[in-house]
Image (cartoon, rainbow, N blue to C red; front, side, top):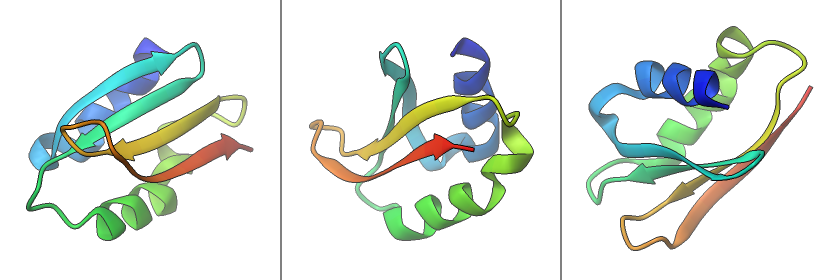
Length: 77
């Protein structure tokens, strides 16, 4: 899971406030107020196969700094 977090941090860079584990197979990506969540989510979904191997299973949640879920998707390759 730590490797996936590091890959997401590298890919998303300063466009997100944090990437952290929420559970054993669930991650939260904390989005700043000014970021376009739909664009970030679409970009990540389009490139996720380049970032993880085919055996990676995880749920990725996009949340506000207050913890409100904005979007989510699962890696079920």
